Length: 383
Ligand code: FAD
Ligand code: UDP
Image (cartoon, rainbow, N blue to C red; front, side, top):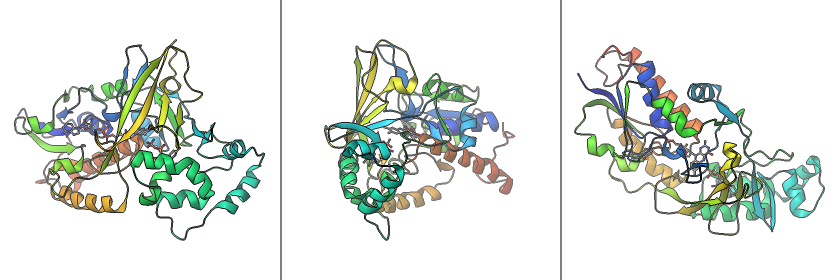
């Protein structure tokens, strides 16, 4: 009887939310394995040697419009309100990004009103019949010059692709404004877990029905530990041994530094679209609110090789993903969830929502397929 109901591969948001729901709501026995030495996936944070809370895998800022997601996570953490602000280093100045009224006025030494800025954008914008690429999105709103200053170089560095080769959804993440709002995000809920992400994950996984095994690739234990169903949150192409070839993921190298001064830069993140090999520098104290005589920062250097961090949204990759997805759908008793397993450029809240939806489907499916369907008995009756 000592069988796990679920083997969950990956202790990031996707795996942890599903483990928590399956254990706490459905009374299932869950084994979570992660090949890394820690829980939390890419959202993992830790105290560095100087005692500063840092994000090992780059800055993670929580924001969502979903009350459901926010309320769900609030069971595991208190929050510190935080609205992220970013400056871009352009033409020797630090100006707000997303591009807003102050960006244009500062950059060109103007004193436009919002109304006048709208007219300015209309005069330089290059309307597109169909907005397909990451170039179209920006050029059709603010014209080529601002596109070149803020987006072309950054995107080429980040993706090693020209914006014209990337889906519109990538640069569409960054809006354009004619007012003075200089927040990076405008979501209803913007806050950081008060004691960090790792604490949040610890609470989420601290259920007696959940066992966590770190430093373990699931393939090492798959044949040794009996389980009924698998929840997989790693890269989907790896699951199928790259049968159709590799799905491209973009990687980053993080260079962490601690400085002997209370503050390093004027805001949480400074973007460098046109100079340096890194894309941005983030100073963690802005995000965490920590008071400390020193400060820790991280540089992000885009890389082709390394841990898979970003799916690369473009048509040929979507096509390859569809082939893997067809295999995934045919795989009985295996559920693919999360940014890597569903090849989606998802933020944390979207991954949480996807995991909650998957859980709802798993538990709901029990009603429609009460018997015989593998892994769908979620009420806890199987003990
Ligand atoms: P992951 O966190 O990647 O977890 C997957 C886990 O599976 C990993 O821990 C991995 O070790 C494990 N795994 C993989 N293969 C195996 C295997 N074979 N065996 C065992 N374990 C395995 N989102 C935001 O909302 N706000 C932000 O500010 C933000 N900033 C980001 C900055 C960067 C640099 C990056 C890369 C991402 C950022 N994100 C941000 C996105 C966020 O990281 C993801 O949405 C979220 O962490 C994805 O969770 P996940 O569980 O799908 O994947
Ligand atoms: N981007 C850009 N210049 C910027 C900020 C963003 O060109 O100053 C583009 C770039 O292609 C980037 C994308 O917009 O990859 C999305 O930016 P975001 O800050 O959301 O990236 P993430 O935090 O996910 O790495």
